[in-house]
Length: 291
Image 1 (cartoon, rainbow, N blue to C red):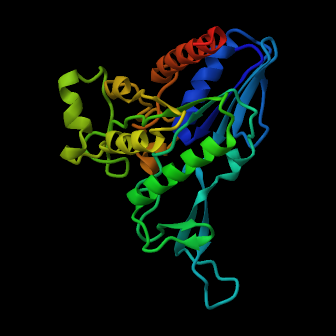
Image 2 (tube, rainbow, N blue to C red; image 1 turned 30 degrees about the horizontal axis):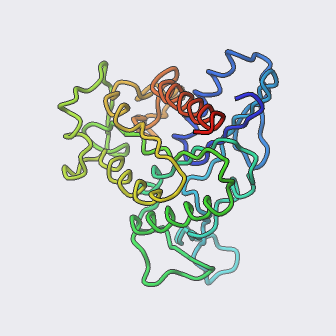
Image 3 (cartoon, helix red, strand yellow; image 1 turned 135 degrees about the vertical axis):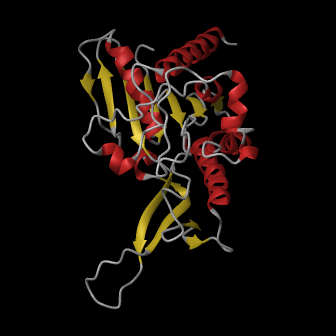
């Protein structure tokens, strides 16, 4: 990886991933310096190897913003409104990365749900500056954004750049969703025989999103040069590996519920790092050998 750069683009689960990566790499270069350029949310430069690793926060990948309802009274702030999503425009945080990165890892999915965007403040999808008609439900909007973002990546990112799309990271809420007292106070991994009960979309459980969205992501990247990075199945076992009630802040559980979505570090994302590192190494060695 000497003289090469790695970029992560997506939501907080890709941030979870990049933090594990930064910790692992710092063991090899204690002179690492924080790096936040080109729209990066966080990152580091490792001078010993001239490697930069950074994360660009773009939870929907596409550009979106809050549009409040116009009030009859000047200056009055309205709680009602919509989130406009421009399906064909990448979020500013990664729109200008050009060809700085030799490896890119994309993800989106964890914000595509009614807990982030309830019916009172929905997503409204636009293309070429105009509302898409008829209006799209959230899952259909997700498909359209995926398709447009894949097309954008194919158009503007160099063919030489190694591109991955990380599939969903599974949640482990038991007994209800995050805002319904869902819990993950487990002390051992799930058995293989339990996984379908937890994650199969046909069971309509609170953790069904990972497999459901994975099918749509696979369809969207088919025929492109973006490789699928499937870390879902191995992570499904680890109901015991989330922060749960240990959130490091007083009253956090009362306010936000248990965290059964992100991962403790050290933990599961370190295995993701091992897998990604081998895939990167294998890809660059194959390129060098002309395979």
